[in-house]
Length: 176
Length: 198
Image 1 (cartoon, each protein chain N blue to C red):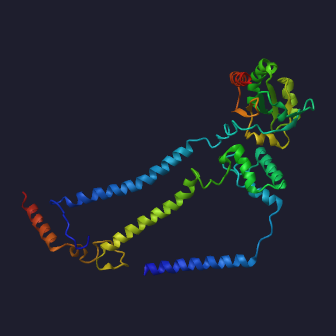
Image 2: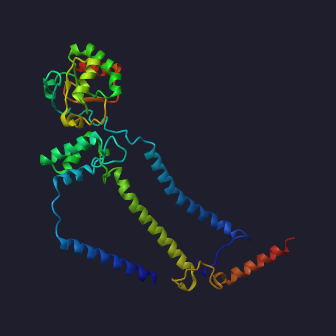
Image 3: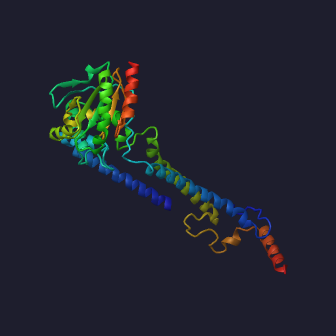
């Protein structure tokens, strides 16, 4: 039953995403960005070297202002945003990019969330499967922990085990 | 496990036999990510976010060319004209306290190595010519002082603040970049080596 509910939720999410994409496609391409927007777009991806956690686009510092000026000059000269980013990387290192690269040490930043979600999924799947196996009669919908259902604990004991428990309890009672 | 006979061991020992093993697995599974995240945080938070790694980035590469005007003489200086000479490019500003600190050392190095072929250039960084004139009246410097419109040359040299000093060898490659105050021993060592290599 729960699996069916989850499937319905996933289908609903896919349907909503599809409708959103269709609406976006129907509206057609947006207007081309202005020159200031193009400068800001490149500057927003660069770290202001003399600030704490501010992009070149957002920083009021003189150095950021000069960097925005250089971005504008290079855009006017026909350079692509990637070429301008490469110029700043060649001068200041990869550190200047606000978005970590998808290679080398930067790959850790990209892969860690995916690995964490996948690992969590595996753990959740394993735990749920083990828990379901413990429930007698395969009642998938039961929320009760193992052993709490009526007669659950006794039902999982074999006759041999029950006899042994009784024998050892009796031995314990005999101990002075 | 359901319905299968289990070896429960001696009386009272079944739980301690199984539970500690499982408990340890849970503890280890929980500790590993915590330790990894703590190590990552320790590594990241233990570093100065303003400590740029650009200092040595340009070393060994060809010095970016420039053509800048000396704001006192009006003469234009081209980096490309200086091949064959070791060049000291000092980025400075009149509002920079550390620039006052290093000025005496720069003058001493200029007096010793200037007549041996070393070229000294100062590039004004985010400053006005009025402020620079006042500074130079107080702390004279007999080498070219260049204007850098838009800070383009400073960006080309990966400058983030002043003072910064770039040593360019006679072949036109960046030999060393000093972030922060330079000193006479550093200037003498670098220039002595580059003049000896010529």
